[in-house]
Amino acid sequence: MYTVYSCVIASLSTLFIEIYDLNQWQAGFVYLPFGIGGTFSTFVSGALLNWAYRKARSRHDLPGSPSRDDDIDDFPIERARLSIMWAPVLVTLLCILTYGWALHERWHLAVPLTLPFVGFNTLISDINRAAPSAANASTAVVRCGLAALAVAYLEDILQAIDVGWTFTCISGL
Image (cartoon, rainbow, N blue to C red; front, side, top):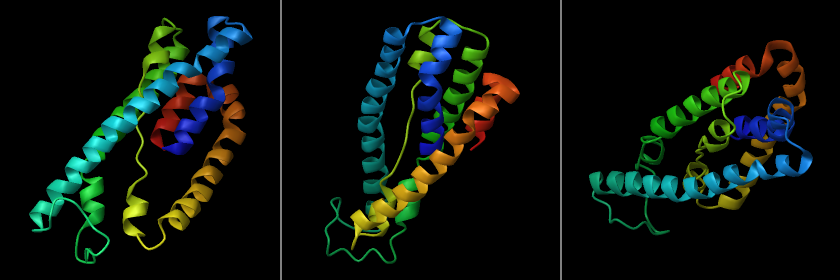
C-alpha cells in the first residue's frame, strides 16, 4: 500500500501540471486533499481495527481492553486485524484504478483530487509487542525500499504504457 501511495504522490504534481495545465503554485495545492483524506482515513481505519479486535477478543473470552500481561500466543491476532482488510483494500484498488483512468481520460480535476486512500500498519506492532518500534522500523525499511524501487521506474512506465495503464498495474500491487 505504501508503494502504491508513493507512486501516486511522486507523480501527482507532474501529471496535474501536464494534464490540467496547472502552474507550480497550483500544483502544490493538489497535495492538500490527499493529506486531508489520509488524516480522515486514520480515524476510520482505527475505529474499524479496534472494532474487529474487540470482536475477536470477545470470541476468545478475553476482556475488551488488551493489557501487556495478556497471553496472546493462541489468540489469532492476524485474523483479528486482517478480517476487515478486504474492504479498504478493495476501496483502494478501485480508487487507484479510477485515479489512473480519470487522469488518462482527463476527467474534471475534482475527480482525481477526491479519491480516498486507506492504509493499515498496526498488525506488525501487535505481533511484536516486545519490540514494536524495532518491528515498525524494519517494516519501514522494506516498505520504503519497495516504494523507492517503484518510484525510480515510474516515469519510464508512464512513458511506456501511459497513465491509465500505469495505475492499473500499480493497483495490482
